[in-house]
Length: 254
Image 1: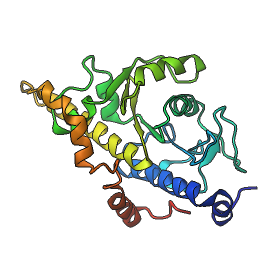
Image 2: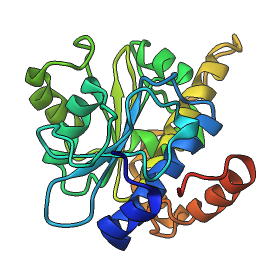
Image 3: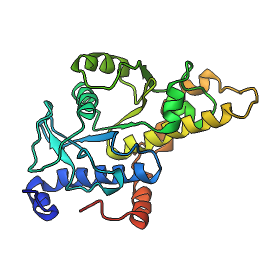
Image 4: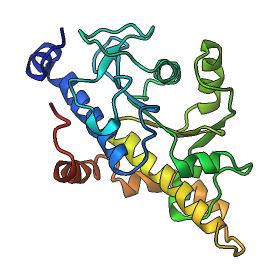
């Protein structure tokens, strides 16, 4: 039997419930920005506490209908820990469990198949230093070669190795992935990643020679990232994003 939102909130406590609310909002914001791919990508968030548990979407739900109570809690082996009839995406579990296990700072892992992101992931040169947005991505970017749909456990160590300590991972011929110290940070990082790709596709379609940003500017972008976000890890923009969501698609916190 499925638990009601009020019952679940009481059972999981305030910290997990807040993580559920933020993650559900993130799913709906991805849909609002047009980055979703029907039901086929995934965002996960670590449950606060000593156990290595995390939350992920119920497989079969559109992103704009996900709620805090519909999210599925799993352990590192993919076993469901909630009283829920919903399954999880096996490819989602492979990717997300690998990153969560390897990175203590990977509180949220966000993976997309956005059109512009996949387009740039298929370009040999990858992300180019063409925009202000791109310098933040390039200062913490890694690449992982395509190995087919992520269903095989054997891929995990290579994915983790390629990601290293970076914030942005371009999955070649596949899509984009960001790691955040919070749901807010992972979302704002993805905004910069996807926007960088969209700007690059636009610039390359113009038929003019491209003007690149110099490497020394990129080298200083990590410090500038913290300055721009005031060290809030994306939290500076998050309240405004939640207000926008409340105006367009309320109900994620149920």
